[in-house]
Amino acid sequence: MSVGLAQGALDYALRNSKQRIQFGRPIADLQSIRFMLADISIQLETARSLLYRTTAMLDSDEAPASTRRRLVSSTKCFASDMAMKVTTDAVQILGGTE
Image (cartoon, rainbow, N blue to C red; front, side):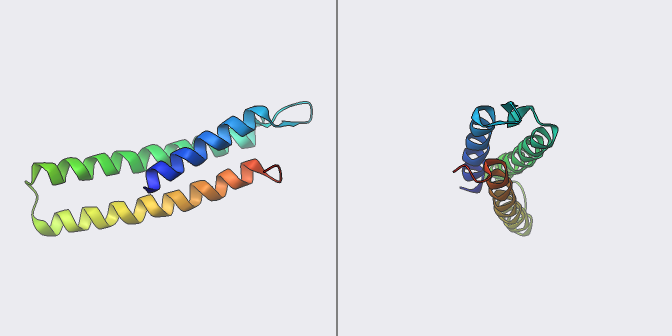
């Protein structure tokens, strides 16, 4: 759920940044906005990769129960923290327009 929420926030912020004009050009052209969008993308892909690794491990049923619990808990914690940061950054990109 956290990965999906973060993906939606990224999509919305990216679309908005291409449409919102400041200083005579879209804010997506500003380096600071590009850096924020890149950071969001990196965090999202990291969480998605961790989630896929965790689900693959659970499907294989080869790891001990303690390892499965640790990885599931770590994935949930990382993904929810990432979603909070990504949505906060997306709000910053949107500014006072929405």
